[in-house]
Image 1 (tube, helix red, strand yellow):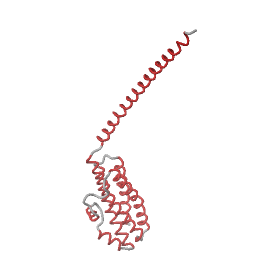
Image 2: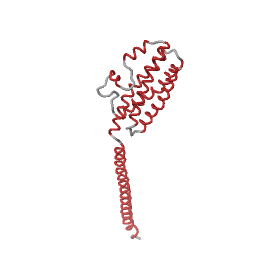
Image 3: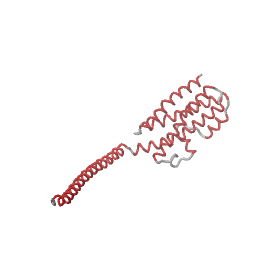
Image 4: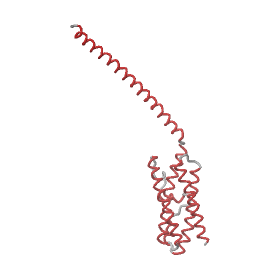
Length: 211
């Protein structure tokens, strides 16, 4: 009758020990799995980074930056010219074209500004102030803009079409240059859009001049 009570503490201790061993084994197993997963994660992250770095061409990246830095003020001047057409133009076709140019180029300016911010690059080209635009393909000089602003009626329409054709042709030159070097799909897409859209607009403007 006294044996049973004596066995209970022993049995209790045995169960505690067994439970402790089982818990330790479980924790060790979980720790081993977590370590393995961490190893997989840490090894895959550098691989992804290496792959991304390998895909980036420093020369191409610099070309993308310079394209955006140059095309922003180029587009801004086209928008300024479009505003003049909406104010001074006498032809409904010229005003429609000016509206189309603004609708296309305003969003592209915002897009390229976003790129430069993401890339950590300044919006302006190093060493170039506003007067430096004169050397960019197709851009108007301050004198050109003053003459255009002073023109009215059919004289304005003719001058605007001639200057905008030259301006668009400059944009095509810049877009084709970056297409030859870029490795960035979004830069390529925008540059191709400029080439396609402005080529059509050039054809339209030439037709208006001829008519």
